[in-house]
Image 1 (cartoon, rainbow, N blue to C red):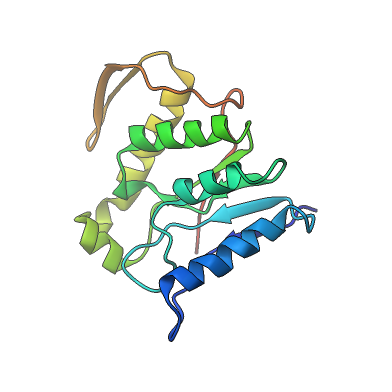
Image 2: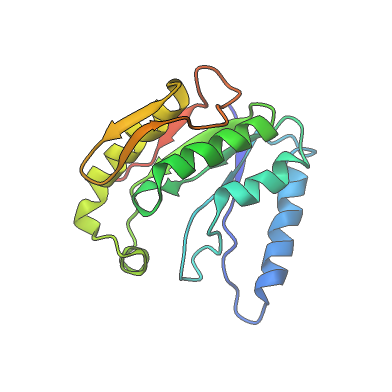
Length: 176
């Protein structure tokens, strides 16, 4: 069995955002010495549910502070992002961490977040599918060519490539 920690940075009444972050950074620093196997970062916006707008940025911090922890995104909400940028950022994190990344992706669920990003929730499944195809193709192809309903890329070289071969493990969030 493997056991990990997820950092969610819940907003706390009476505490500054900086204090909440400091507490979670300290918890993250304890993960490796206490024998945990992984550290995951969430993505949420515009509510106090989780003050974590950039999982890759947060995990980059821990990539430089740890040596063996698997670092994972839980999750990056693909319908809100340019999938080529996601492919680049995850690949860079994989290189910086020495090949310790798990890529977790999801399609999102919070109406507040969808409204703020201007993405209609009914488009989330199709946008998610296209984005996953693009991320995987960006990692496995020398040149990316893709023409979809929401995204199109012609003959671009997406760099860096992930350190893990053929690519980092990919996890997909699901709920019933």
